[in-house]
Image (cartoon, rainbow over all chains, first blue to last red; front, side):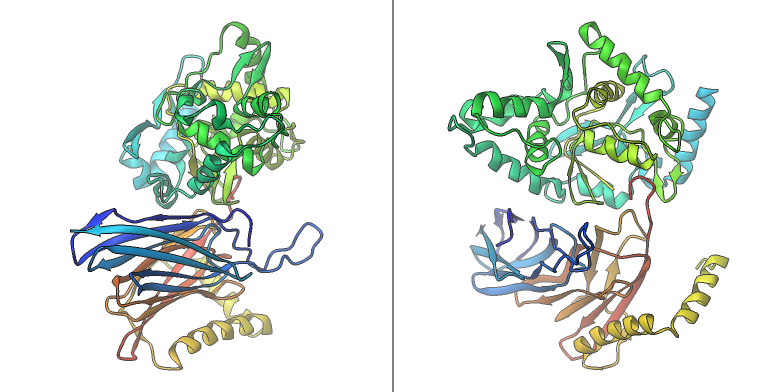
Length: 109
Length: 278
Length: 139
């Protein structure tokens, strides 16, 4: 597991049924592109988060395939429909096999 | 002559900066806190009418990153700072939080830093390492290392919105004078002083980059260039390398004096830490 | 549309350079990335919007957003990067809009392309040139 990886997510706490809400996510990660060299001229191997998904109560909101061109500390902003109260689940998949997860509850009135 | 040059620089700024400056953003609000990003220059800043935050010199996209704490990538490091603040380290089995229950008690500290204590300029980094070594029995952190910038960022954030107000008289005076001298001394192969870029030519382009006044009210600052929090002394080193000078060391007497002088040049601006720059 | 002498020169250079292998290989990679996404289908102009700065202050972190109402997926490509793929946004049943924003790396001034895949199998495209500057002290 890459060191010091920390996810942040921003989801409104409440919404009305059927509302479209904006979600933002940020995760601390170097996103080593594989194109850089170290001070000795050796290639630094690629080490990125290659996929991010967001699901709500088991149903998919967005599924993003990521390449090395995504900036350090990957940020995403997107919209989700919330039909009922429940839980958003966020998952980031690292090249090294690590999986980082975060979740957020939302109450629908 | 000096005044004319400054006026010219200011008009060049207004002409070329487009919407971001033309509509006079001199106050912004972040998370419900108002920040003053331009203020009348203090009397001792002889050649400026107005002191201006570096935020005003950045593109609309870069500016936007700072306006929301979630969008601001510096906050992943602030989060790390919170973890470190609570993490027990060293022989005494203490964390920062063992003595300082709520980090909010540091509100106001950053606004008054650096300060002169026992005949020496004390910086935020000194305070953190003094606590680590003398109270926690822990190893000091590197001046510009990730741990230090994260915790300094977290403590500085507690003062966000407060006006920069450093003491420059009394026992601080000789250090302030020394800092001023450094600010106006040409060094390096390019034979340039801080003032040549940041006082005489702020607002103009240096290649594709717009020169700011070199204010330090937003440090530690997240730079898009290296995607991490940057310390004040680390930035000084970068500047000196750019003018092909041999940089002073982080924590050196020179950088301490310069930090005090530069902080005083930002008097009246709000503490803006952690800012976002290019 | 401003067309300066420098642009004309750059175009001329581009045309000459295209006959060299490395650049052709890179161009092919962009085509390959697109082909993998479209399966070789025709791509119409429009149906997707791409928002990116005209000039990026630093190529390390360039804010970009895409929006294609009704799309199943959007492919984002940076044609001038060592590998042109940036991201593919696949929208699930609970997507509130077929839009997303992110921050990307651009190795230099180049064309950024967004291609939307519609549920009926058609494709739409938008592109924008983003100038990436080499800073003085900031860059």
